[in-house]
Length: 309
Ligand code: 13P
Ligand code: SF4
Image 1 (cartoon, rainbow, N blue to C red):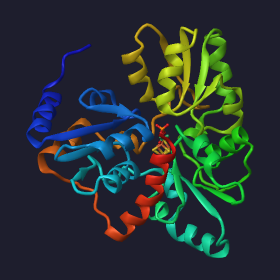
Image 2 (image 1 turned 135 degrees about the vertical axis):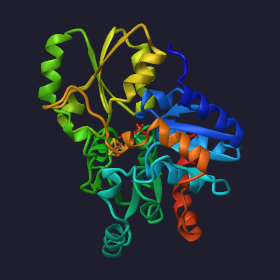
Image 3 (image 1 turned 180 degrees about the vertical axis):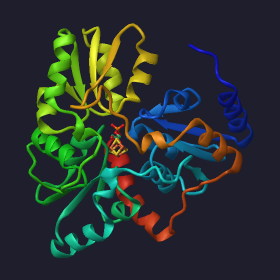
Image 4 (image 1 turned 90 degrees about the vertical axis):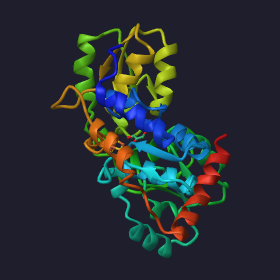
């Protein structure tokens, strides 16, 4: 591996000085992944944030992830290198709209995918991630009608896997719905022995034709254990960095869209190595949230962390 750059060294020195924990999602750029204490999926990152005993947490990911870290570990600063790093999926379910739906359907049991705002979490009964969604949905009392928010693709996949009917909020991830089965089939002509692993936020035809559908963390285990030497990875492109670092003997090919050979999430990519350095140096920007919302949002996250152990 290439030696660390001057700015990466500077980040490691600042991390020590601040006694910070650097958490990074699998979709972050390689330069950020390499200075992080832990790189993982939303579920792994939520557990790491909860356990953190450093003086502060730097979250290299998008806003809802850093917000979740603050909800589970409120007594220390949680820094997000770029405060505008949002998520189209989270934006597709505004808290006011969910509140109105609940008013009209008061008995509904709300299962919320972690890709949502603290305001939406505060209105939910339990949270799930792509890594534990089936396990969580199976634990919801059988006599309750479930509303699954905000991702209709993950919801549809979980519903099919568990046989549990659910109402689906009409939200989706702008990046994952760009993958098409047609583009994947064209790529498979070039790599006929490759297996296909896809994220559940992809559309149904892509999921149905994949060899495995799972969270980003589970992709690591699947790619390591499967017999294939070449794997087409149908999720955000940053995933490839971690796979190549941890499984250097295999070849990973980014999942294609109809117009592009790879697919970056524009929000994940708003964090840069310079912004990471600056936030550690300035101790800003930090996640803030009203305590009443935090407490309400914590209850369904706590339920998830307990149910998914
Ligand atoms: P994972 O929890 O599987 O890493 O997914 C997070 C995400 O934002 C997918 O787009
Ligand atoms: Fe949100 Fe999609 Fe980006 Fe994940 S990849 S952070 S779901 S916009």
